[in-house]
Length: 114
Length: 115
Image (cartoon, each protein chain N blue to C red):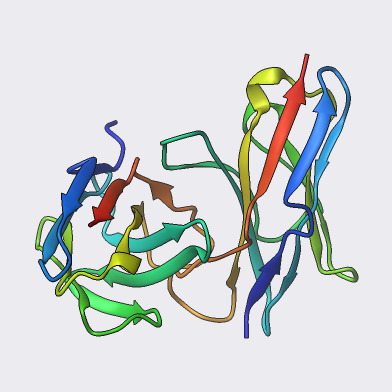
């Protein structure tokens, strides 16, 4: 079974631009979550989607948005990029929405804002 | 509010010796606890979880973790460390009384195993 696939693996963007990251969950998984990883703040929850609906959202500005499609694939978008948005963005999928199932992570998208 | 603390930024162990990576947590409801490992430039790999039942849970690659409710701890252990265990380890918690998959992570512990 293929794992969680994130594309692209690396991105370099200029301040003020916008970016879209993609995540394909494990086949059959309907829950997708996004996390931001930085050296200073560690791993922080961005949002969670299940069956195309946002179920939970972290404490990030409105510049960060996401969506999930009917095939469970998810995208996150960051508009008006700032230098501080440079991070590893990780997507995770789970088979259910219940808290007792483990999340499986993709390899991440490394975003560098210059 | 939920939180996870990993009190050690780095743990150094000689190969063949036992290792412990510490984790304490705080949740309002029943805790669902997880350990993940991250190798350089990679995502997080699931190691093991505690949901309910036996306090000692066994996971991948010979790792195990002990849940202690009174001390609100979930320490990761391995009887005999390997050089290949060197990586960044994260403890995470979910509040079992709430639906949803949001994980709260600790800051991570860098494990270094020397030959």
